[in-house]
Image (cartoon, rainbow, N blue to C red; front, side, top):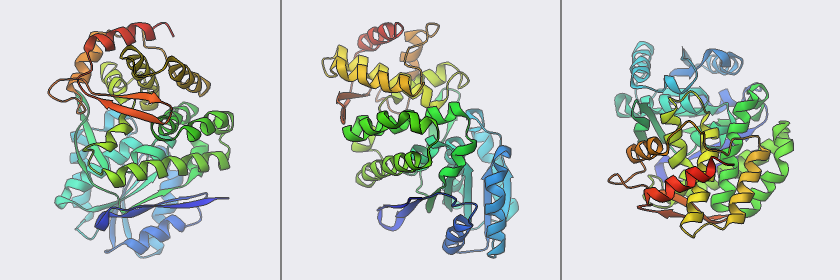
Length: 366
């Protein structure tokens, strides 16, 4: 079975992404974490449904002389709050964490964002390790150092850039991932091809039946190339001053849709799938995106069994208001990443609200 080691070159914040089948059960994950530990104390953050992955890591660390303090939090976006951060601070204090200690996260993007932010701000920053267990977290949330929590007004409005000390990806965790979560992750995989690499988009689109069947080789390959593309972007623009913004393709409407529906109706990747089609239709309206590009993207998303239509019961004005509160907006003006073609996107400032309204009306018909 293939294994990959992808470096993220950021000077003294550099780290590796390790992708390997059986990384957790074999004890390799525990070995890698133990080798990088500067002290003996650690906190392992997970949720109750992931004990099959957290337990062998915990016992492996104990066998190597570390003392991992286990903290479990409920899954889901509603856990990603400042109240949960305070709970983690209490756990860090109870475990006696100091600046030589490690925070280890076994879970999806919500736990990674949440525990990463707690690690970034506790004692002005302690190191943390990501062990992502969902496809979306493996290809996106765990890589690049974005951490944060939500406020009632919007997603990820409080956060910090705090690079992990390592990202350890075991594709076997996807065997127990609910099918809906797997499909949601495929939205982000397809996104990488749209924004950077047309051949990768076509490769993923061809492989969708294998990916949906959880073919191990196809999944490992898709995860590795997604991580490589994100690594290339992040190493050029760590704190999103320019290039990194292209990773937000589909996220302006996607994040707004999540907020407007109370983070209950859509998985993140589902909202992003809808948002990517919205961005294509907005690009068409502005004369930037060719209609055949929109059709090809929508077709791939549909094949991945992801939603592409805009919901009939959500008002465009609510989306516009939520998007203007989003951290990607500048002085209340809408910013969108729009597709010029497959493999090339452009960041557009001050997108006219009428173009967004028109696109969402068209999208209801898909």
